[in-house]
Amino acid sequence: MPTSRTVSAFGTADARPLDLVIFGGAGDLSARKLLPSLYMCHRDGNLPEGTRIIGVGRHRWDREAFVNFADESAQPFVDARYIEPAKWQGFLQRLDFVHLDAAQAADYPALAAQLRSDALRIYYMAMPPGLFAATCDNLASHGLIADDTRLVLEKPLGVDLASAIGIGEVVSRYFSEDRTYRIDHYLGKETVQNLMALRFGNSIFEPLWRTPFVRSVQITVAETVGVGTRGGFYDEAGAMRDMVQNHLLQLVSILAMEPPASLNSDAVRDEKLKVLRSLRPMSPEDVRRNTVRGQYTAGAIAGELVRGYLQEDGIPPDSRTETFVAMRAELGTWRWNKVPFYLRTGKRMQERVTEVVIHFAEVPHSIFDPGSTLQPNRMVIRLQPEESVRLTLMVKQPGEGMKLKPLSLALNLDSAFTTRRAEAYERLLLDVIRGRLALFVRRDELQAAWTWVDPILEAWRAQDEGPRPYTAGTWGPAASSAFMAREGVQWSEEA
Ligand code: BG6
Image 1 (spheres, helix red, strand yellow):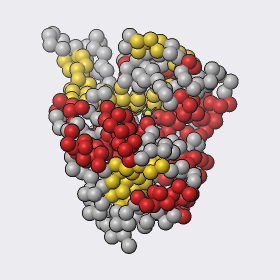
Image 2: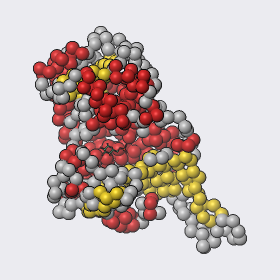
Image 3: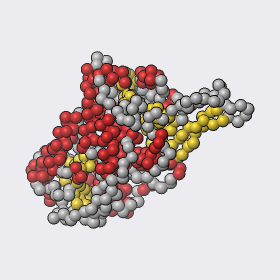
Image 4: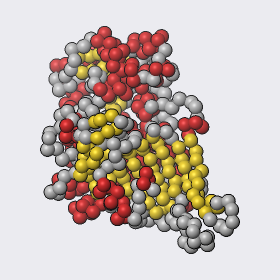
């Protein structure tokens, strides 16, 4: 019988050894994120004694081939400053590999032979969701799911509400919700967690964090990368499914939620869920008016010529998939009534930046020189590439009269803290190991997000027009700025 564990809001370390099984262990995510993050956990002594990491996949690999993969494909993704040869060798000792076709029941005894009965088991599904059901069935029929086995699911968790429900049903047959860890890696970012610190660790913002003191909220997640080698996947997804449905809506929910009673995982997720459920549904007419889709064409990023989306590998020449979205979302609550949340994300944009801008109300009456244009206060919270908070205030210009100008109070968190910050995946993997669920998406949150997204995707499908072209290396289609101008606002880089 598994030993019992108490899981507090902050989790507890399990004394047992760990068998961490990565389905899709030879894949891209494993190389770029999972193995490098697990190495960092190992290096810092954060893996339980006796931890083994078992890659699983269709490659006919043995342990040695997986070790070579870790050396050649994963190590380059570890910050070179942290590679210590002895520690890296120690990490490699933990690795093993099992050849397994997830859909083939006959392949599972080989996995069973690797697993220890006294170890805590974690299955990490870094593979297409189409394989989740067969994998869970096969694990169960081979007796490989214990009462406390944990499951980690990677996105995409569905392509719409119906498929997300389908995945949820299959998974819940074998894993209770408190053993299911749905990854949204944005929740693992220190900077995203800092939004909670900013909101709930300071009392000055809370009374103003609502209508009518907040006039609008802007969230931008701009990337300079294109679709790279993921063309086939991306063309089925597009920016809405790839970024808005998960990362941007999670940011909205953290920015807009009511203060939770504690950091307990369900206390936080209950509040986030309420936000997601309060997103105002959009009619096809709202979608036409309040959304802009774009698709990049050839251009230049940092002086380098880059291809257009339709010329990328694996993209059909007539694809209508959006690589850019700008939209207005609204929350139907007392706190946020009629406060627009402008969301924007795109690939191949001018800069890589993730930023939240809170626009506060203008002063009701100006007593200053007519020449002083009073700018409403703005708080700019930058999450990437650097972390900073800027609050613009109006101050008096020296000299005669009372002329005012805006200046910023600025906080640079990167220079304030020199300690190493864990990468999102490192933090999340540690949380899975320690049984902390707060930074994982609950099933009802996921479904609430899809419930809001589905009609938007449906309305786009029904429109004659496809996404508007924008040149790679710009801030998206001209229609995005025009949309904001109609709203009487500007995107932050234009302000
Ligand atoms: C992933 C998307 O979830 O997030 C990618 O699938 C995107 O398309 C990535 O590039 C962005 O993450 P980050 O951490 O670089 O902002």
